[in-house]
Length: 148
Length: 431
Figure 1 (spheres, chains in turn green, cyan):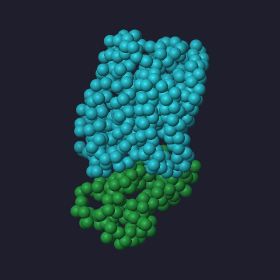
Figure 2 (cartoon, each protein chain N blue to C red; figure 1 turned 30 degrees about the vertical axis):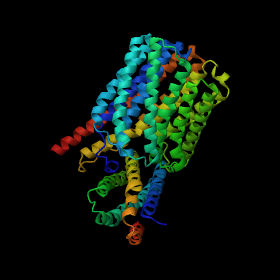
Figure 3 (cartoon, each protein chain N blue to C red; figure 1 turned 90 degrees about the vertical axis):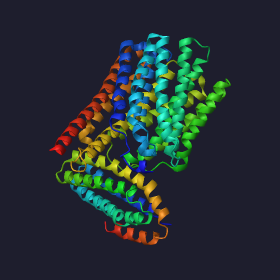
Figure 4 (cartoon, chains in turn blue, brown; figure 1 turned 120 degrees about the vertical axis):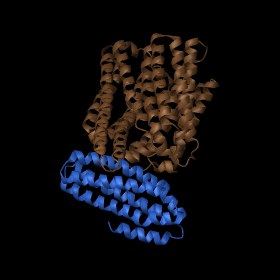
C-alpha cells in the first residue's frame, strides 16, 4: 500500500540518484554533462520542496493545528538547501570544480540529515494524522512531483 | 521530538570542539614516547611505557573525541538534549585530559599515587558525563537501533571505566587479583562494549549519510549491540568463575560478530552512490580492512591460544585494531563533522542574509588526503616495528607524531578559517 512515507521516501532516493549522476560526471571532468545532470537534480529537489510546502505541510498543519512545529523547521531547512542549490549551480556555471564539490558535500549532509528527520518522524506523523485525506493527498503529491 | 527535528537545540560549537582539538595532541605524545623510548616499547604489552602509550591513545584520543562527538550528536540523532552542554564540556574536558596525563605519567614513571589520582579523576569525569548523557538519553524511547545502541554503549563505558579503576588500584596497592585476565576483560569492554557498540550505533546513521549507501538491515542492526554486550557479560562471568574455555568461546563469538559488522559495512560502502573517494571514505576503507585482519587474529588466537603467546602477537593485534582500525574511523568522521559544524554555525550567524563558505573552503580535501597518507605510513611503520623494533621503533614514533601533528594542524586551520569568516560575517551584519 502506498503511504505518504513510502511515496516521499522513494522520491528522496530518486533525488539522491540524480545527485550522484551529477557528482560522478564532475569527478570524470565532464563539466557539461555534470551541469545538465545537476539541473535535473535541482529541478527534482525543488519539485519535492514545493510538493511538501504547498500540499503536504498545509494539510498536516490544518489537521493537527501544529503550524510552528516540525513543518516550520523543515521549511527553514528547505530555505538553506535552496541557497546551497543556487550556490552549486553558480559554481558549475563558473566552471569552478572545487567550489562545486565543496557545496555538494555540504548539501549532501544537509540533505541526508533533513531526509532522515522527515522519513523517521514527519512522514509517519502525516500518515497517522491524515488517514481520511490520504488518497487525495497522495494524488496531489504525485502530480506535484511529476512536474519535475 | 522537537529536539530531533531542530538544530537549534544543538550545543554551541565550543562544547564539542575543545575535545576534537585536544585529541590529536595525545596521539602526538604517544609518538613522542615511542621516539624517546624506541624499541623498549615493543618488548611487551606490560611495560610501563607501553601501558602509558596505549592509554594516551585510547583515553586521550579515542574517548576524548567520542565524548565530544556525543555531546554534539545526542540531540540530533537521538533527540536527547543534554541539560547544560557547555557546563558538561567544561567539567569533562579538563578532567579527562588531566586524568589521562596523570594516568600515563603514573604508568610511565611507576608512581602509584599518580596512577590513583589519574584513575580517580578519569572516573569522576566519565561519571559526570554519564549522568548528564544518561539523563538525557534514557528519557528517550528506543525507537531506532541507533538509540538502543547508544544506551548500551554508555553501559559499556561505565563497565570499562569501573574495571579500569579496579585495575589501577590493584596495581598501585598490590592487590592480589588475576591481572592478565582482568586486563583482557577491561580491553574487551573498552574496545567492543564501548567503542565497538558506539561505532556501530553511529555508523547506522553516518555511513548512509556520508556515502549515500543503502541503509543497514533493521534486524541485525537491532541485534548487534545487544549481542556484543551479552557476550561481554558472558566473558566477565567466565573470568569470575575462572573458566578459560568460556572466555575463549566468548572471544570467538565477539570476533565473528565484529567480522560480520565490518564485512556488511564494507559491502554497503561498495554499493555507495557517490563517485568521489574522499578522505572520509578512504579512512573508513582503511579502518574496515585493518579491523577485519585484527578480528581474524583474535579469532585465531581464541581457537589456538598457543599463537597468542608468540612474541609480539598481542602488540601487533592492538596496533592493527587501534591505529589501523578505530582511529581511522574517528579521524574520517572528524573530517566531515568539523567542517560541517563550522558551516552550520556560520550559516546561522549569517541569519540567511550572508552565505557561509562551503566545507572544502574550511578544510580542503587535499590537506586531508596528505594527512591520511602520513597516517597510513605511521600504521605500516608501527606494525613493521613489532617485527624489527631496533630498526623501526623510532621512525614509527616520528611518523605517528607527524600524522597526529598533521591532524592537529588541519583541525586548527579549520578553526582559524571558521573564526575569520565569523568575524567577517559579524562585521557585515553590523554595517
